[in-house]
Length: 102
Image (cartoon, rainbow, N blue to C red):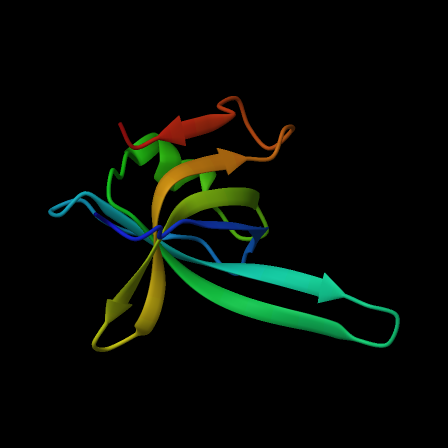
């Protein structure tokens, strides 16, 4: 039996994504902000999307608001990352609303 490993994060891209089309991977960092009465805390979460397309690369630019569903994975160099299975781009930020990793 596999353990549950599911992550949902929402935020904005810190900068334009980078693409490695030899491995079909998009890489980007999501800035997720938590606001309380006394605190504004930013978390920067690295994300990889293993089904890269040029269309997605062109849409995932700095400040694009996204919702990412994926799983946590440990990497030797970068620590924990999210491997995205589904990316949803906020309405009003281009024509395509989401792309899935099916």
